[in-house]
Image (cartoon, rainbow, N blue to C red; front, side, top):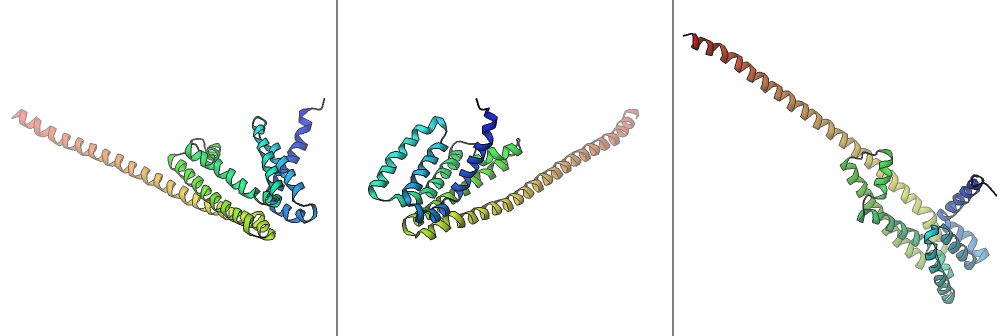
Amino acid sequence: MIPTASLNGPRRLLLLALGIIGLLWPLVVHFLLPHYGAWPLLIGLAAVAWWRLPPSQRRWGWLLLPLLVLLMATGRAELGLRLWPVVVNLGLLLLFSHGLRHPPTLIERYARRQEPALPPHAVRYTRRVTQAWCVFFVINGSIALATAIYADLETWAWYNGGIVYGLMLAMFVGEWCIRQRVKRRAEAGLEEAGLEEAGLEEAGLDDERQNEDLDDDARPAKVSHDVS
């Protein structure tokens, strides 16, 4: 019997390779389609998509079979290949929007791994970031659909396999810059609140001292009145 640990290495390499191919799928299609045609690539894509499903959900993968038959009957195998980025964007949109309807969001859960006691303003911020990504997936999915239907293969490949990752990088960098500003603003607010609290405490102590001084001044007058 082969030990399970010995299989982890090859399995991880296979998952890594499939992940890279998935990210670069449009470019893979662009370079392999003229040599092998659409059908081998489409069958391979469907097989990998089915295999990547959780074992308990693989029964839903059989829905791919009638889709393949439909594409075969209509002669639109290449369109099936082109629609993969649309499917990815739709899946990410459903994943992120689910957290908006049923908190916590995916981004909040990731943030709590680094900071378990996440303050309320940070929770609100992660929700806004989730909303921003949902808008991005809607817009990008729409562009991916338009390129799949109307653009030539080269334009489709370079947008969905290259330009889109530049846009995602811009989203990540922009979000990081905004996050730093939000953190500084929150820290400044906490510092200002601390100073105000300290000022109130000092003012309270001054009032107590004044009251004690008034009491001290009133005692001799009361004693002299009693003596007289």
